[in-house]
Amino acid sequence: MRLLVVFLVGLLSACTVTLEGVSLTYRLDLTPAILRFEPDRGMGATYFVGEDIRFFLTLETPGWVSLVVVDPDGRTYELDRFYLGRGTHVLPPGAYRYTLTPPRGLHRVRAIYTDTEPGALRLEGFFTDWDARLRVYLEASRARHRHVVETYFYLL
Image (cartoon, rainbow, N blue to C red; front, side, top):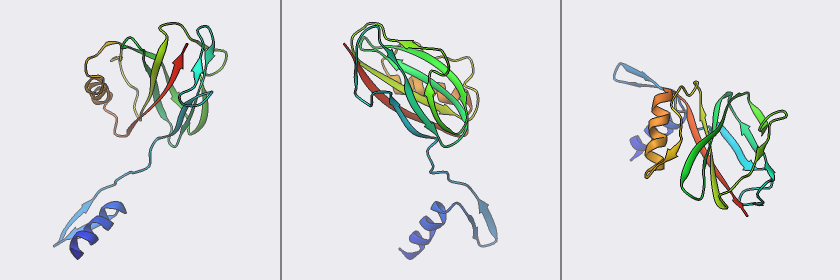
């Protein structure tokens, strides 16, 4: 039991462990890349067709962020891709706008962070297993560090 506790402390501290002359070095990063992701009115807020929506996104680490929407009809589409620095951002940046159009209902939005450029694969279409498709997307990016956060809003 004591050996297990020592091993777990070593694992969580991201250090070098030496076992009988064999040195193992590893790094376990438990810090999330995305610290905050929500619509400008807050998670679960209500918007109306024709209104603009913005998202607040805070990154711990600079990298690529893809915004992917799953609409009430089950259609998935990539809204945007950005390379963003560390800190808090308002999306879309600059003079761009996201103007809301039907279908009405629950819209889920995922911010997908990768430390490498996502590549040509896009998340668009109707997927019976959205999480499986997301895994393929992340594997294709060849990212060493990745993080996915979901928020949602209602469109009336």
